[in-house]
Image (tube, rainbow, N blue to C red; front, side):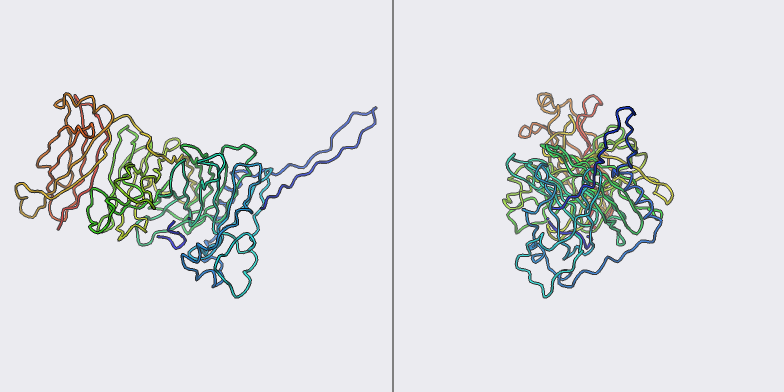
Length: 520
C-alpha cells in the first residue's frame, strides 16, 4: 500500500470590483467604458495545467517535512485535529470544509484553493487552524507547510447535524458516504500496476473547491494529478443524499505508455467470510468491507464474483466491451454475520461505477492480495482499457460512482451465499483434488418457481477443471435455490467456475463466478 495512505480518517477570497460611471450630459448618448474580462475558473484551466505539467520532468521527491512531523506515529498524528470553529466555506453554505495536517505518512503537501466568484485563492496554512492535542514541538512549525488533504461535512443524516460526507486524503484516494453508512472501501482517481511490485501511486497535488451557494445541494471541486507516468485533470461533483453520488470527469496525459492503467479503481478489504473459514479464535464469522465484485457487461450479463483472501496474489480479468457498470459490494447486511458493534461491517457502503459513454474494449480486473488481518486493503477492482494510453493522446473519461446500501441493481436472482467444503464422495483421479461448492440463489422470480422446482435448471461451466456432479434443490428458508457443485481439478491448477439458473433457456439469475485453486 502507498506510504501516503492511512488505515482509516476561514479562508475565502473574492476579487471583484465595480466601476462607477459618471452621469453623461443629456445631449449625448451614454457609452459604458470597456470592462476587462472577469476571470472564471473552469475545468479547462486544470486540463491546461495538466497538459503543461506532462511536458515537464516528474519531480518525485516531496519537500522535506520537519522531522517532528515526519516521525509522528499513527496515534500522535490522529491527535492533531482541525478546529471545527474555523471550518471553511461560510455560514450560508450547507457544506463545511476541514483540512488535514501534514505528517506521519502524509509527507507530500497539497495545495487547496477555494473558488469564489470564479476566482481561485489558496487557503494559507496556519498552525492556529489546528489543535495539536498532546503533541509538543521544540520549535514553531514553519509557515507555508500546506495540507495533507481535506474533508467536507454536510447535514447528511440529520438536518441539525453536520456529518462527514467526503474525504480526499493520500495519493488519489477519496471516500464518501450515503445516509446511514460507515466508512469502508475507497475510490481512487487512478491506479497503475495494482498488485505489482512496482505499483505507482499518482497523487492529487492541488485542489480547487467551488464555494457552494446558500442552500446548495451539491459541491464541485477540481483536482490536478501528477505522477511518474501520467498527469491529469479531474472534476468531481459530489451530491449527498440517501444515495450519494460522485460524478467524475477526467482528462489524462500520459508521460509514457501505461500498460497497467486502472480506470475508476476501487480499493477494499476482505479478510474472511462464509466461503473461507480460516478463523477459529474470533467471535466474528465474517470480516470484510466488501464481499463481492459485481459486473454488468456491455452484452447485458450480470456477473457476481465472491471475494477471497488468497494465500498468494492473484488477478482475474472479465473481458468486455463498453461495460455498463461494475463495483465492489457489501451485499451481506445481516449484523448477525459480523457481530461487530465497533466496526459495523453491516453498514459499510457499496460503490457502483457507471461509465459515461463508450469505453471500448478492455476488462474489469480484480486484484486480490493476501492479508493476515483486517487492517490492510487487499482488494482492487478497476477498468483496464485494451489499448494502453500513450503520450500525445489524451484520455478523456466520465463516470458516476454511487454509494449504495441495499438497493437491487437488477431484477434477476442474486447470489447470496457461497460455501465450500471437503469432498466426501468417490476419490478424485490421480494427481487431482476435489471440492464441493454450495451456491445460494435468491430473489428475482425464484420464489415464483418454488412450487415447480423442476422447471429450473442450473447451467455450470468449468475452465481448468471438471464438474463431476451438480444438483439443484429449492431452498424454502431463503425463498430461492441452492446449487451443489462437485469440482475436480489437477493439483495446483486454477478452475474458473461459472453457474447460473435458467427456465426454458432464459437466465433467471446473475452468473456466479469463482476461482478455485486446487491444493497442490
